[in-house]
Length: 287
Image 1 (tube, rainbow, N blue to C red):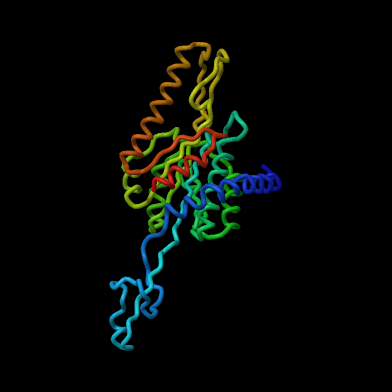
Image 2 (image 1 turned 90 degrees about the vertical axis):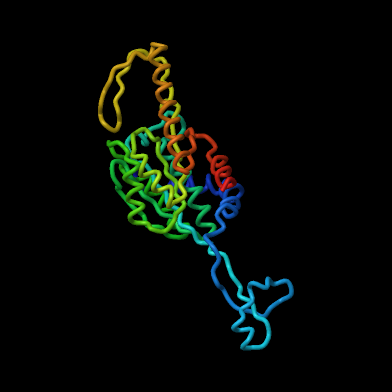
């Protein structure tokens, strides 16, 4: 994808996600993540209705009239977007590639966070971490994140989710809101997911295409694994073969969902082209 095409695509995504973000997600995001606690702001004279426990007794004694401490919410959060750039994400049979759909989800999440003055960071990974954009605030930074997701070279290697979680844990110490976007086609270390979920609030978002789960009857066909290069012939005319393929995919998804649930993390399954905002709305509401 050339630079002019990337810029055009970023602008299209920004326009397309703006309405969803402003009308649906931003308010729910703010309600869900009100902050990490309370911090001291100022001292002012006591007013009728103020809580007694807020009285600053030292200043009250000094000036011989009641003063209260004013506390304010610590609003700032850090959102981390962990995006799988293994080759299987550079694929799609509908209107969008999985990577483009991921960019759109990232836009809605990023603009929601930016609207609340929160920082957003990006980590691109496959078999290892390939690129990191440290957390920053503002619309320009969100646009840079989208451009990075769309312009990166996707990697012919299996994705290692445990590796990116381990990296995040070692580099970003502050508790963060983590969105892990992948098709979850590869194995991972469950222990690392459990450890990371104790420190951070994690939502795994499986982005998939219809053909990831069901193969149509197109006769004998040569399949190639985009990540390993392995090739295999299959008779897709066989109803039994198609059934077994679909069942295997169902079991993989079920296993991942159970791993997240048992790790006190959240997991959602989203088809490319589906209205992802309803999943995010429900997630924010539950928080």
